[in-house]
Length: 258
Image 1 (tube, rainbow, N blue to C red):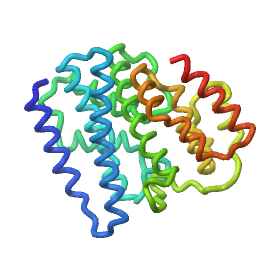
Image 2 (image 1 turned 135 degrees about the vertical axis):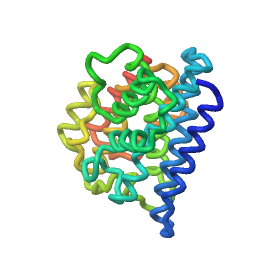
Image 3 (image 1 turned 120 degrees about the vertical axis):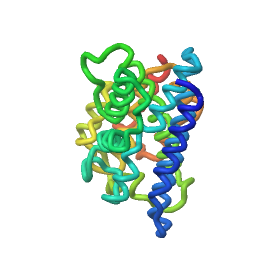
């Protein structure tokens, strides 16, 4: 993997995204949001990768995973006007279809191509693949960390009001109703991530995102979360109920161990 190959793939990505151009600024802002998210996940994966000792070739390869991890988001939003996979289609699978349709990965041998596609395929799944090869599992975990780190940046900023007006694509169109779901509470108290199927309102979504702390794989990622005070800021935008206090006691205890 040389610098030129990575550069060419970045050019292809930029040209592809430029085909999604809306005259409506509210629609275009969500395309721009995903493009900027991709760029930040690329930065994140390099930051984490350097701190865990990846060499230059491995860093370039990791950046390719980040570059294409959300490729399906653009067509998804253009076609369905949502980023909810449950109301449209799995954006990871859609991205793989686009890569294959345009033969974007033609320069890679079958082994590397499979590694790229499997990392994209599992970056958004609630569970890691069983019986995955050690190398595949490593890159899947690395991509998931880099992705979650930036999503936390986006959603915490949005919930705290720094992004201005309401944007249903960020809140996944969840109703801003009181309380939290018991299945969400039970999962987090047990130190487990929340299943999106159990999310019924905006508070549940915030708690699902909080629970990602249980799915962080590398210490540098946790260090960035601590530095950004993502969990403290998330707690500030949730009701101060006894249940939520117990959840955050569990979350902070887990964070401190890492």
